[in-house]
Image 1 (cartoon, rainbow, N blue to C red):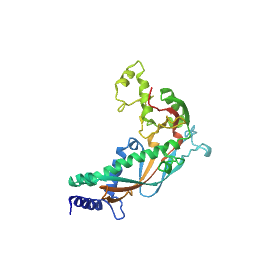
Image 2 (image 1 turned 120 degrees about the vertical axis):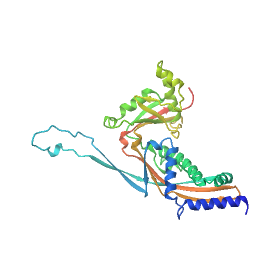
Image 3 (image 1 turned 30 degrees about the horizontal axis):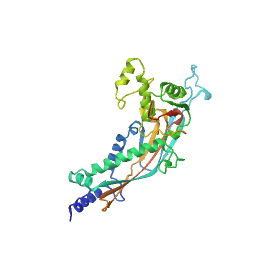
Image 4 (image 1 turned 45 degrees about the vertical axis):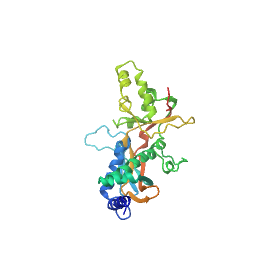
Length: 317
């Protein structure tokens, strides 16, 4: 038996130990997969991520939108009209199946087989790739898209519809962020201290650059701070760049969106049954791994969001 045949045979044996009958990851490997996928994402760690044991899950939401307190009258209960009851609602996550194919060169397989860490290697490789693609789908998914992948579901940008302002094709600045805060209903604004502005890389850089023009200590700090590690804010609210945010929107294909939201209001359901199947392409000298996962993404309460459209995001001055 040749050296190549030997290590590929070992890889087969390791993969066989990695999965259950039917090709599903073992529980411990499935847990590791999700932990890596969430950690690798720029956005997922901030969201409400729900591991699911079936293709569907209902999330309950409850709150009081009206006044609860009334004037007290001694020895008298409140009338029925004055009694309060919570507002109940449910959000249903219905997962979509996604499939990915990863080609791993023989050399990479051999190195990791010999070092005894092939299981961790292949799990991390899959999880990193899947995390990137999940983030793209849950943000930019659009069932009217001609892109077959993005067509699978409406992502959070498409779902944000209740409160929308038009930025008018200008670069991101404090005036736009101010309008967004003003457009947020007071009911939701006072209920959370975790709001963030989520936007694209170029829009975040434009806002960071606008801070440098201020003749203040803040302007000096912004000018010398690495934009990749900067914690830019407006009114105490962080401005966060999400790499998968599109920068080709609008009729001029050079615009992006900004969303004001509490990230915990963004729910992502990921089904734990992760299927992994493997094969070899001996002519291309690659080890082929096919992974399938199921997920869905929805706002828990969409009215507690604001979106700014037509924000210029092209590179340049």
